[in-house]
Image (cartoon, rainbow, N blue to C red; front, side):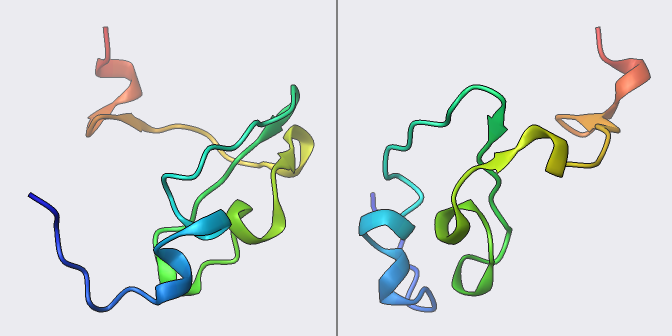
Length: 70
């Protein structure tokens, strides 16, 4: 069953902004996605980012703190 999302801007339903479009990410780069499809300045609009531009640490995996993950 297809989930109806009438609040999503048509530009994000197909083409390069569609979350299901295939993208090849070069070695040493990351493809980052924002959590607000209608208004995220992420890799769908600016392309992959060099690894040295990404700052952060993982604190959870699947809702579990890193130190609790096997």
